[in-house]
Amino acid sequence: MLAAAAAESRYIASIMKDRSSSARLRPLHPAPRAHLGAEDPHTFAIGVGEGVRRARQARGWTQVQLAEAAGLSPNYVARLERGELGPSFFVASQLCDSLQIDVNELLHGAVPPARTTRRRLIG
Picture (spheres, rainbow, N blue to C red):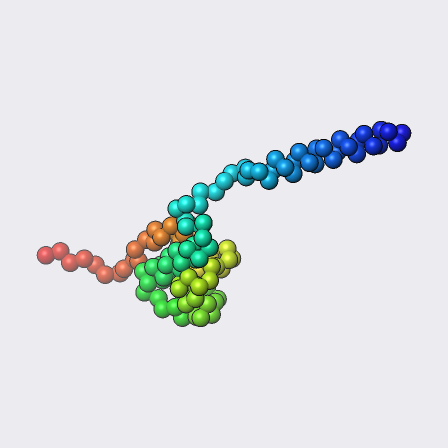
């Protein structure tokens, strides 16, 4: 009986060793990171900050107006735009909801132009 328990214990240990070594060697789905500048967290934060600034300015908002709409402090929004801070996913989601853009647009800088109520004069 003890021999069977010892054999089972060795078997489980070998399975766990195989799982831990192979699972840590390579991710299942490596994320494409080169186009986001994600190799360097500071570069990534600067890129996201520029995306926030472009989206905010495209809507004609001040940092204070964006902060109020997103439930953040104006100082925090200013530091995000300067790239001093990188937003958490929750904060990025709040900003995108307030700016009515998709998170991908924030990361890739594809901010749609602001809609205007002016009519074009033909003549």
